[in-house]
Length: 152
Image (spheres, helix red, strand yellow):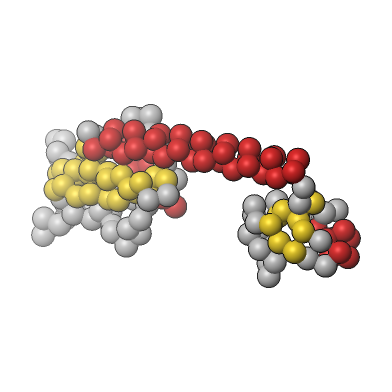
């Protein structure tokens, strides 16, 4: 029996593939559980239509990510921090603070999107942080940390 997989099935194939399976496995497991459909002209046409829609959505999301990347390049997030006795910065600028600051510029990212997890903003001056916006579209967040003025 030839079926078109609607979802990835372990040890059988990936979504969209046409695979040959035993009649019992196809009729009693794959098709009833919505994992596959019979391979015929109508279902093949539906598959091609869904693939085209996925490509269109992928291109749209990629363009949106590129626009966000350009917007990030034009922004520098400003933070203030206190200094200790040696002149070093006290504490760090967390990813949560960075994400909150980006929201003020109408940019929403998830903390999981940050590529360089080990880079911690813990010094004064300018630094950058890379963000994976969408499947290989990398944006750069510019961050500037200045010394907080003491109020008397």
